[in-house]
Every structure is written in C-alpha cells, then in structure tokens.
Length: 227
Image (cartoon, rainbow, N blue to C red; front, side, top):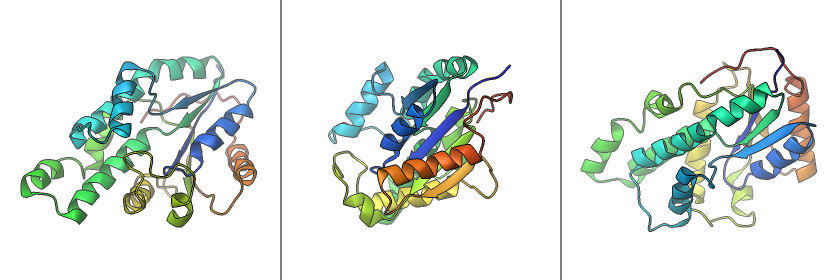
C-alpha cells in the first residue's frame, strides 16, 4: 500500500526553516505541516512557557524529556496522515532535541558549572544514546534537510534574541552538535543544505531540488522506518 513521505527540515533558530517548511508543504497537493514544539497541546504549553519566560526553570533532563513527550503526543497523528497519503512536513523534530541538549551540556563545560551540577549532568547529557532513548520508536523521516549558514547572517535577522536559546555562542555550539548527530556520509536520508546568502525563493527551489532528487515527492511503498 502506497503512503506519503515524512520530510523534516532542521536548522538553527532564525535560519528560515519555518518559512521553508511552509513553502515546501504548499508544493504538495496533499500535505500537512507540523511544527515542533507543538505549543497548543498540554505539554506544548509548558514548553512555550519555558522558552519564552526566562524565570521559568527546569533541569536540563526534565526539559529534554518534555520535548520528547511533545513529539509522542503527535506520533499517531503523523502515522495516520502518512497512511492516508499525506506528505508530512516537519519543522524541527528529534534531532533538534538532541543537538540543543548536547549544546547546553557543552555550554556548562565551557562556562564552568559547579562541581555538583557537572557531576549530575555528565551522567547523561553528553550521552547521545541517553538523549535519543526517549524518542526510540518514533517514525524516522524519509528525508532530513539541515539548513546551515554563517552565524553572522543568522544573528542579523529580524526577531533574533527573542527566545531563550538565541545567543550567537550557544547557537554556534548547537550547529556543531547538529553536524555531529546528522551524518550525511553514513545516512543517505540526511542532506546538509547551505542556504547562506540566498533569497527565500532561491532556498525554496534548492530544497525542492533536493526533495525531487531524493524522490521524496512521490508516494512510496516502503514501510515506515523508526528511530
């Protein structure tokens, strides 16, 4: 039985991924755009408070698990849509959760956290397998496109700095962590796409070319993979 394909766009904050995810979804006759975190759910509302209110504190472990729980909230909806022939476009997903948590751990190492905090965090926050474990069983994207560009260009974009993680040094670490997690050399479903100094239209065409060349724009009879 033919099904739709799951296409993920990942990228740093203000890299244009949300704009491009919307444009990409519009190119399909039957598609659904899902943005993570999905802030309208019960768990998503907690995440929104955490991201927008710097006084709202959570341990890094709690925050990581909260983002994973938010993805599980939409798991069945994603599977149903794919089986109904929809192309599901994701704006952020599992790899954002891993990259941002890894970057926070590296941030603590760089800034010199207290001994107690370092010991507590090092037990899992630098362990990719631990970070990935809560998402095991979620559907694996048929195509993942990571949008990359220079930090100078990102930090000059409108709205930069509005949310908790929008700091140049931190985003540089996030970029490094993304590239550690998304290995296009060993995983053919991963594509690293340089979108620097390109217009919205140029990026949209570039991403569509990647989708077409990967044959992610046609229904498939492949079974849905899992993380």
